[in-house]
Amino acid sequence: MSTVLDPPGDLLAELRRSAFRPSRTRGQHFLNDPSIARRIVEAAGVTRNTAVLEIGPGTGALTRHLVVRAGRIIAVEIDTRLARALEEAYGRYDHLAILNRDVLDLDLPELMGGFDETGFVVVANLPYGITGPVLDRLITCHGKITGAVVMVQSEVGGRLTASPGTKAYGAITATLSYHYGVESLFHVEGDRFVPRPAVDSVVLRLTPHDRPPVDVRDASLLTTVIRAAFQHRRKMLRHAVSRLAPGSDGYLSDRTGIDLRRRGETLDLAEFAALADALWEYRDHRRDHS
Ligand code: SAM
Image (tube, rainbow, N blue to C red; front, side, top):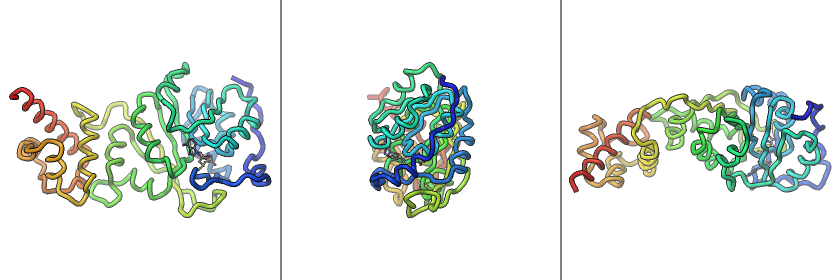
């Protein structure tokens, strides 16, 4: 690891003086408040023993705190101009690798597996357009991720921490909660970014469960059931389970005690797990008798 040097100066100010124009489609709203950047990195608990995957380093608001704290950083930036500017400013840190790639094109488990570290902490001020797909990837490679601190739009944060039966509760809330504990840490107002976004943001911490909070035979079937239940969220659960296994509704309601006239959005994770297990048994039963 390189000796810790003073991090580079203010790349954002430099870019603002140049012809650089932030791209709206890439969600380029750069954090312009060092105390918030520091709080995010502190919340991630980054030390010299930590390996970090930073998504969208941009002008380095978080990177400049990460380089003086973390043991290794992989920073993935889609924008070639920013990746170049970062390379110039941070090239002297040999524990930092800047990848000029679309994070969604990367095989993250393979990327992380290429390093000695046993797990990575994800740190990001996420561009709005890729928040959903990034969360899906955090779920897929949760075995390699020891934690994540991510800034998202407030409304998304509300969805990820919502309780069953509320409007904000959705498939991603339930699915994410199977893999991670999700905490809302603090709000960040729009005026802390350049350019200013239309909405405020919230910083979330995701902590992988040592053991999933509910037992289920087949985690991917649990995801399938949750997705089906929210596909037509105003419809009764009966419709969703009938699409997954026609004729199974009587068996499922007897086995779980769940009234399938309820809407999927009212079920908590334990109820979804019970439904997924009953569906697994139903299919297994049918296989044996066919
Ligand atoms: N981390 C910086 C900060 O806090 O100021 C920048 C955050 S800005 C909200 C999002 C960054 O993600 C931008 O630099 C943008 O170019 C980058 N980005 C957008 N889509 C990306 C993708 N698919 N893969 C990698 N980086 C991406």
